[in-house]
Image (tube, rainbow, N blue to C red; front, side, top):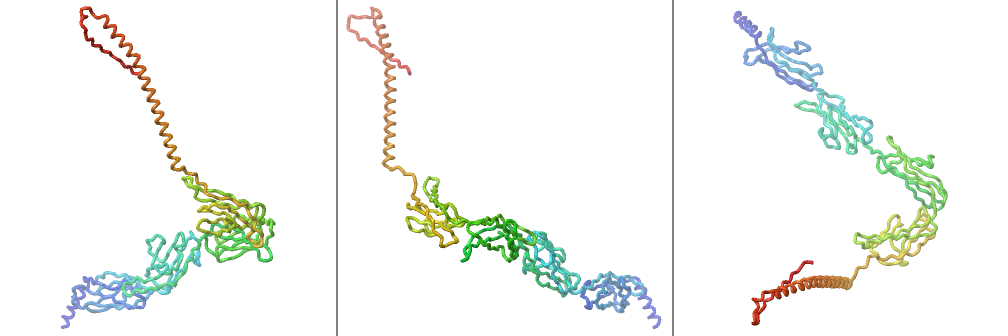
Length: 468
C-alpha cells in the first residue's frame, strides 16, 4: 500500500512539470468588493495543488483540488497582473491584468473664467471634476439636453468642454455626469447646475435732447442709449468735456436733467457708456433752446406717378426759428386730426401728406412744444388742387383726325394729277413726229401702185412712248 501511494505521488509530481493551467476572472472590480479567480487544467481529473501569483507580490494563495477558486478582497493595492501554476515548478497560466475601480462621487463643474460670465468672442472652458472615482467616462448637458460632441459648437476632450468663441447660443445652464466604466453595476454622479452668461458688446451710442417745463423752470433732458449690448452699464454726461454726472444702470439707456434758460447757449453735451471691455462716446448735442418765432411758411410739393397723374401732395410747415416746435394743420378753417383716411403727418407733425387730394385752403400753426401757454403762429393759406394734365375730348380727337385725313387726300390728288399731265405732254410730242413720217411714205410711193379707182389706204400710226 505504501509503495502504491508513493508511486501515485511521483506520477503527480512528474505530471505537474508539464501541465499548463488556465486562469479566469474579472479585470475590473469596485474597491471593497470580493472577486474570484478560477484556476484549472483542462481535461485533468485528478486533484492538483494550484498557486495564485501576483506580479508585484509573488505567491499569494494555494489551493488543492481538480479545479480551484481563489477569493480576493479588492483594495487599491489589488491592482496588478495575476497568474496561476501547478506546484513543484509547473507551467504558468495566462495572465489577467486586474484594476481596482473607485466608485465615482462628488461630481461638479469648474469654469474658466470664474464666475462663468464672459463677452461674445471670448473662450470658455468647463471641466467636470470629481471628489473620488477612477475609470470614468463623462457626459455634458446644456439646458438639460445632452451635448453632441460632433455638433461643432463645442470641443469635448475627456472631462473638458471648450467653447473657442462664445456667442449668445452658448449661454445657459450646464451640468456634467461622471460614470464608472464598469459593465456590471455601473455607478454615476451628476454635478449641480452652473449658469453661463454670455454678454453682448455695447454698440452705437446715441444722445438725444428734449426740454420740458417742471412748473418752475425749463429743464433739458439728455437721453443716452446704446443700440445693443448687455447691462449693467455706466453712463456719464459730459458738457464741453467736463463730467457732470454718472449713473450705474441695469439697462441699455439712461437720462440726465440739466436746468436751462431760454436762448442761453450752454455748450455741447455728450454721453459716454462703459462696460468691462468697451467705452463708447456719442456725437455732441447742442444745449441751446430758441423759442418759436418769426414768419411761418408752407412749402407745397405735388407727387406724380409715371403717367404724370397727381398721386399726393406734400406740405411742410417751416417756422423762421424755434428749437422744439409743435405743429397743427387746418383746411378751410377746420382743424385736421393727426391722422385720417386721406392724410397723414410725419416728422412730429411738421409734414402733412395728402393721399386723396380735395381742393381747399391749407394752413399750419406752430408754437413751443414745452409751453402750452405759448401763442400759436399761423402761416398764410395755401390753395391745394389736383394738377392732372387735361385730356382732349372725343370730338376734338375726331376733328383733328378728319382734318389730317382730308389733307392726305387732297395732297395725293394733286400729285396724281400732276403726274398724269406730265406723261400726256410727253406723248403728244412723240405722236406728231410719227404722223409726219407716215405722210412722207405715202407721197413717195410708186405710180404703178396708183389706181384710178378709189383705193382703200390702210394707214398705221405708230406712237412711241418714252419714260420721262
